[in-house]
Length: 166
Image 1 (cartoon, rainbow, N blue to C red):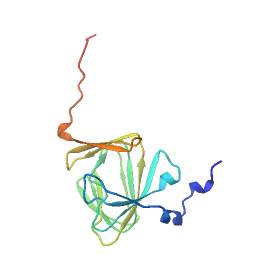
Image 2 (image 1 turned 60 degrees about the vertical axis):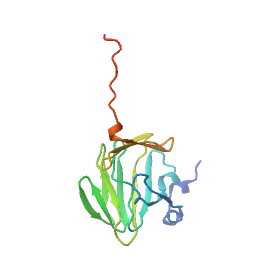
Image 3 (image 1 turned 30 degrees about the vertical axis):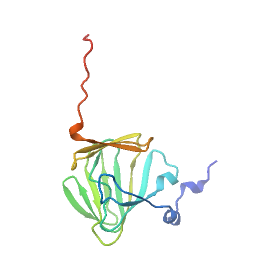
Image 4 (image 1 turned 180 degrees about the vertical axis):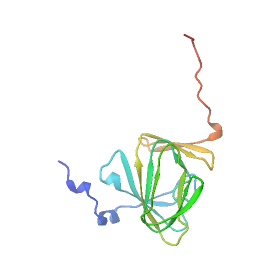
């Protein structure tokens, strides 16, 4: 039988989790501290992480998901959320939900204190993201832990050749 404590992360446990700093490869301003909550609790189909954006830094890059829904919930600090064609100042208690397919969004911190938030969503084997401001697409494999980026101009529709008519 598993240890019931693994399912409960106390505030002190979360405070002491290692913070991995990551940046999106297509945005030099991207710099986020990530604490992986769902992995510690053993969740496999849901991703939940605590994110921290330092002053002057950004989350990832303006993007839209094609198959994985995502949400953000602000815990402390303030930020600017870009959602579709509008910008909103966000703060503690604000929630953002991004259904699929394709609600473009991005988060940045132009303020003087850290922006801390929960981010979560589905964890599928394959995800396709669109980066409309830079005309690229990304294909992500969770099993292989890799991403591939494609220019939209290089994408070509798949049109099968008819080999034999009925």
